[in-house]
Image 1: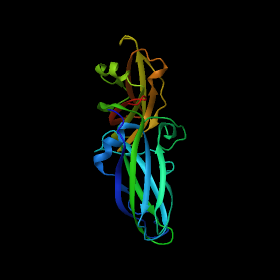
Image 2: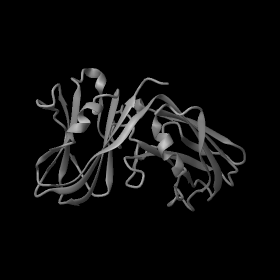
Image 3: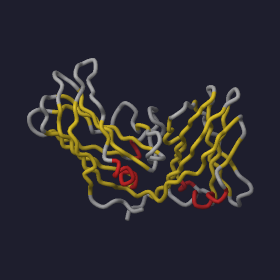
Image 4: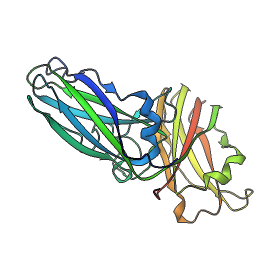
Length: 272
């Protein structure tokens, strides 16, 4: 899939703020679902926002959300911070313009932590809100997006299993060759029906012949039901991958159990 040409108007809605200082933000509205796949194709996105027809002054904020499956859980890429550059004061009357980017170098390796630099999962969408300052208000918000810096080659569900106990499982052998093909890989995991308070480890394995594997040492993280962990592992194949790759999963804790889905998104950094 190539970088989408030009720009697209991906959000065009009237948004309402909250009603008072204790509830400053109104209902956050999402970009049109028909663009979820399109927004996920390019590695980086440049975003241009025009806010007009505001009935009072206030604030504007936009979040980027990503998912492994657009019908399942979504996670906010930048946690509570919003998309870099897309936020600030909305003036009334007149137009207020914002410009920002969702780029790999600014994207946290895991939402809410301060280590940066990973590609996104396969689907993306915008979540847009207005904030109360002195009065509740509405405004029209339009957002254009354009893709840059390479493209998504594939996005696939590699594994969906009910894990019980602390056994080690790996993704299917038939995926090992094509996993090593793209320049960048990002893994997303969704956990459901979690029993107890387990941790989950994701292993990235490499092999030259498919028989002898070296599985990296991951950092386990706590899991709960109904959450997609975007970017649990992000790796570049430019560092000398021997030719085959796999991923492994392992729970830890007292009688742990969870239903786990694992997606992988492969991207190339070259454009065109």
